[in-house]
Structure formats: structure tokens, C-alpha cells
Image (cartoon, rainbow, N blue to C red; front, side, top):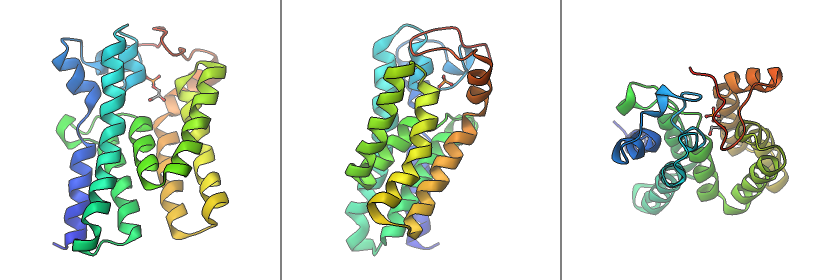
Length: 205
Ligand code: G3P
């Protein structure tokens, strides 16, 4: 097994820790798969009304994306990891969140983890994507719409900053997967049935 594959596997395992599930368990809350949208993310944990649990979920899920990329960058000189491998480490952590081996492969939608990954890969680009999420969330109060818009803009910002390169394809792939994971949200948005941030009107899964 090459060292690159081991590094990608480690990133996947880091991403596989679902903080929505872990934090809920530690704080005595119900498993987020059982209420609201059924998603183990900060938005859904907030539907319990427990803001602290939602914040810890958010910080954990962002943090693991940041951690995976920073660890890879730290190890890069000694292990000979390329820039592209560091991008793929970010993707692996994101995929870990979506399909976590520790939680029966039932993961989340990857917004917080992708945010952490993007911020660590390139803070300027990450901040542009974060600003997009914040603007749409502030204007519409829809967490999902904010995420879908930010995902749509992320590859566009990347090209504005760096032109079209192979790394842009990784960003595009993360964005496409993220939108795919929001397909139920998109349906609800189109039907006007999506619940707003802090609301608890999401249908049971
Ligand atoms: O973080 C995921 C968010 O974009 C949507 O979450 O629970 O409303 O499906 P949820």
C-alpha cells in the first residue's frame, strides 16, 4: 500500500466521525437520524432547540475537515505528498462525512466538513464560499439553499482565483456531491416545504 493511499484512508477515517451523532450521544439527545430531516448535521441538531449541541456539531464537523488537510500539509514534506494529494485528502475527509464507516455509512450532507476543507485548502477561497453561505442563510433562513448556492459558487470562485486547473475538478466534484446529497432539500424547497434555520418543521425521514 502506498503512503498516499494510507494518508487518504486516514483522512476518510477522520471524516467518518459524525459529530452530530457523537455530540448528541454525549449530551443525552436523541440520535439526529430520528427527527427533523434525519440528517446528522448542525442544522438538524439545532432543531432540538439545543444551540450548544448544534454549535459543537458544527465545530466538530468543520474541525475534522480542517484537521485532515492541515495534517496532510504538515506531513507533505516528509512523505512527499503533492498539492493534488492534499486536495484529495480534503475530498476523502468529505466523503468520510457522507459515508462514514463508523455509522453504518449513513452520513450527512457535508456542508460543515466541506467548509473546513475549503478553508484549510485555501483560506481566501474558503472565506469567499463561507461569505456566500452566510449571505444566503441570512437573507433566506434556509440552511440548505445557502449550502447549494455556496456549492454552486465554489468552483466558479476557484477559477476566478486560480484559473482552470486539475485542482478545480476536485472542488467541482465536492460541490456536485454536496448538491446531490441535498436532493431531498431541493424537492422540499421547490414545494415550499423546507424548514428554516432553527425551525422544526422538517418532515420525518
Ligand atoms: O447542513 C446540511 C444543511 O444544508 C441541510 O440540513 O437538516 O435541513 O437537511 P437539513
